[in-house]
Picture (tube, rainbow, N blue to C red):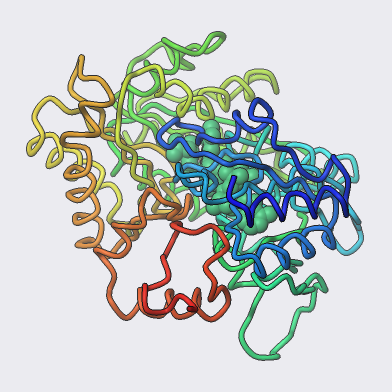
Length: 482
Ligand code: FAD
Ligand code: MLT
Ligand code: ZN
């Protein structure tokens, strides 16, 4: 541990006690690698503050001593954003102890949750109050409010409610000099200059440490229906979505996956099975909901809308879950894709977006082009079709190990995929952020004015470069304070 780090750890321990910091390697070890195991870091200590003021004091000490900090929530991020540098030059700062829901008001449909509150816990608290927090994703058991805000997370309900950016009504954060930004008040109108809340959402811990957020709740559900549809192509899937959206706004999720991905999940995740007897090249999971007991039940709504789709040949086969258990079983398939992929061998992942109408073309032509240019690879795309966001994963040739793949074609494959995305007017990061995984690609694809502006913001707020160095954008060398 460097002297400045050791001094900071000692001061934190004296001021806030043993619970506020650990240097125990076994305690820290599980937090040093990302969920996919792509990045492995080192940290001589992990700070574990219990309150906003403790975070502020720790950051002020770190700023004075120029000690780098990596904020961490549930460590479920997909771009290595919460993994510290391998040289031990940064300390982890975990928000996991800050897990209080400070307020939850069903009348105003607002709640204030601290950064370390786990998504599943927050969703359950909202439901107990007869409301709902309408953001869900496969990592609900570990992702924290601070991480969700800092990555501007998406998930499977963006179609109707948008990303975290739309669900956050206020942000409390500690800025890189240790000062506190209290932007929790849920003001519908506030034109006092630049919007710091919106700047901190999606900043991936590089501009401030989120300590709490004011979150928007949605009315509680009266009922929901989940359908599984087998169909021919992404083009037919999008046509089906458009046909449904022309008739109702009750559909909240519309997730697409190819047959081979369904086979992978069923083959590797215990307790899952294909929802349809018939086989189809593509599948879609659809969820429709109702918040009004007097409205048409979602199950009959889906039945009424899927019938004509089947007759018109938009869909090949469909089943509507007959029970809540079966609905959960359908969702388990969708949310287990990432986990099943880990069993399928090395792949390079791309979380990309293109204009929704162009996504079917991109999914087919992009996959064909990747496989043409890199023989033996298999490109698959699945995810949030209605958001124009799919997870475009290219798997290594059969039998190739991860080290060979990542030392070989992986980076070239990523450049090809990202070039195709940019050519389609899309984004190389739809919902996971940039982290360390995409930093070089963000700079390569710019454009320069955008990168310069991001760097200028980073230099203005964190001139010492202590917050999450090496993630998202780096301070241009000349910008670091002497
Ligand atoms: P971490 O991984 O701990 O950190 C993520 C980033 O935020 C890092 O840069 C970190 O430094 C920073 N950070 C964390 N906490 C704070 C804080 N309090 N203040 C400042 N910076 C902070 N993501 C989606 O968007 N959509 C999905 O559908 C989706 N599905 C997933 C499915 C699975 C199975 C898994 C494993 C992940 C999935 N993710 C998805 C990715 C991940 O869950 C999200 O990125 C989530 O927002 C990360 O939250 P976290 O608390 O784990 O953050
Ligand atoms: C998902 O939608 O499943 C997640 O974003 C994780 C992934 O990229 O697989
Ligand atoms: Zn996703």
